[in-house]
Image 1 (spheres, rainbow, N blue to C red):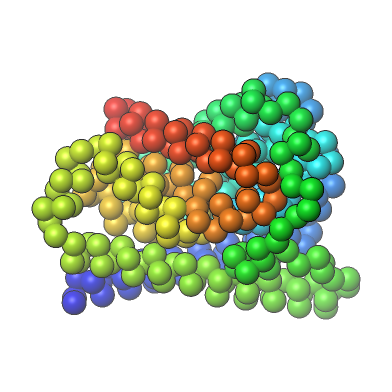
Image 2 (cartoon, helix red, strand yellow; image 1 turned 180 degrees about the vertical axis):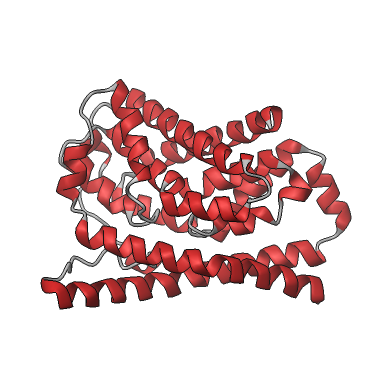
Length: 300
């Protein structure tokens, strides 16, 4: 019981400040940054556009569930599909709050911070380009009638109320921050619980078998990221508990795949985009994440 409690409590305690920070910053972005502004910033040029679309994640720390409906509306307004997907996939990985939490979680292994930022950037750009090759008209991928899954989103990002005046803005920020904080904590506690159970009670023979087969370890970590659906602002604290058993490749696959695709995001994608396109996008994300894990094993 003691090893379980140590792992569980260490994850929760270390992640708490970043949950609060991420919730607050996300609330401010939601209330003060309009979609019209993002649409103006996104470039219309093809090749340089992918790079700039990915780099926008550095200044838009929005959660992965909030970015999906924003991206849909941008594509509906004429933003190229590939650039929209690059923007959607990069923002939850390379935004400042995520990078700060990754730095803190891997402060003794800083190469994981640079690997996550670099591979996350490259993965988002590559997937955006792959999407653009297969789909010329972004509006054709959108569902005619939006299906909403607000209950899957913890942050209140679907709320259209931005408030007016200083008092209403403060109230809106506090409400948004509180809702997202407790929403993220549900997934964090669940993820920390599974991680602690795995570390404390899983048979060592199974762990050794997974760790000695890099392909299985990568697939295991990708599946774990999909099931846990942990916010990217704190997933590094879960990933860190696996670094000694599985090494950098599988852990990096977890850190890149999770913010791009998990169980709740898949449901939201299916609500905003046509099923055929979502299946194709999921395949691209999975293949690129697996490739990321294998490349990281070779380079790190």
